[in-house]
Image (cartoon, rainbow, N blue to C red; front, side):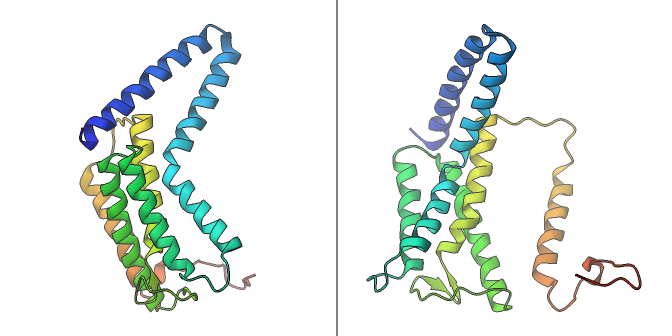
Length: 204
């Protein structure tokens, strides 16, 4: 079964569960409907955050409990763990192949942004690691990928539909302007983006 077929089957399974719970809630009046909507929304959000939640757990636990003198650097362990987690999600069909491609693209874009920002001195990753590009450990790309994973999974789970949506070219122009600002704002290349203050005012 390919990723799309599994995605359709998963969505169908959610749909049947959603319908059953909705009927039970409706039979119990307005309070039941409220409880159903609240719990259903929370469950779908939690499922959409699966990859991101696991990444946050890895970052927090490794930051708090990583042993000194471990045979592998923490940053490298995070990279290996995130990759293993991604493979596991696909193998156990908790994630579709299409969602995996979204994560891959976000990882590439995020890593490129991190390489640029660290080269410009915006921030740094002080711990040692072998799995890195320049000053950027590869696990950082998975932090951006977590956002892509949430978007793709939430889109499927909530079955979004839009009316009177702006045309595709408008979104592409806006996205291009955002990335242009991101990569060129160093050194005051975009003075119009500076925060305006009335004359005589003092910054905090």
